[in-house]
Length: 408
Image (cartoon, rainbow, N blue to C red; front, top):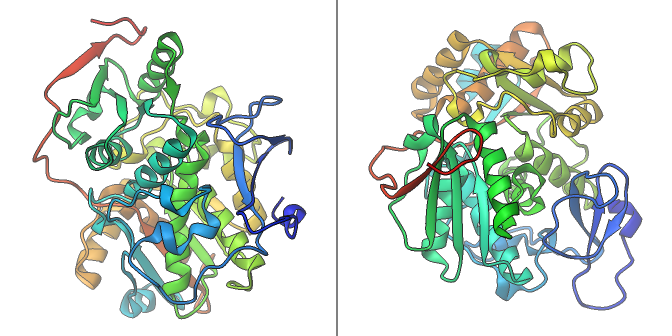
């Protein structure tokens, strides 16, 4: 699609076109998140002949710097919440200990809510404002919801309905706000998402879309564009922990765009990593399955890394499988002891303390190094997507729902 529309702009106005990633159907610009023909994920594509990403930063706002590669029509629409510009650093001693060439980390834990999801909130609310969406329903395991709630406090005019499974309530770290209603569902993450979608449908409100919200993926893409610009060499491999995998899909698209612009010579191999206690994608990938089957689904998942406890990725797995195969990567599972060891390694060698989901990505590097997938010639980039937040504040005013979607 990127090559198909290149050179098709007929004037100075920015060209953004929307296509389904599965069937290729083009759609007009709208808040729609899924294809009308096949329900596939929609994505935004730009005429790269118009793209102008400066070689050096012209200011601190990533939304302005990478504007050419974002689904916004007008620069004035961008609402920046102070996220981004996060460090990307090399740890030579750890690379040497693992027997690989070079090892780089992108540390997203320094964002305002200690998560890469701050990028999601800023870009999504910027795009929604352009499209006239001011009230929305969303669900997450905590990071996205916390980022959205913070952004709603910064950018007036939005009303949010946030749904969360009861066991994830302590991961909602924001105070009560008149424009944010928190809904607690007596169930796990997937159940909370289903109740949220039903609530949106029955209330006539906009469902934010999760993985299928293209602005989420484009926002997460920014961490990788920054990293590619910060690294003195190109990565051969990229590692990230995944639940739905939307960050990795955004990263893959960004790498393809940078290759087409001549900013990368190749697309790196993308390595998705899950914790072994909740690894439906890794199990399906290991079996060579094209789809998630019932025996891959993990009911009521548990594990160290709460942020990636998604036991049923049926709707998103095909996209992650395809990008891993296209790039020469794979989907891995890492055991709890390896995740704990990886987390401590970061403290000992880099002085960085991240959450267990971030450590899962490094645990994938440990496993890949042990199996020989990484060698002394390999350059690896690890996205540390966030850090633990102190439970300093939580929403106290909440509404409760049953698993069946009935208010309590």
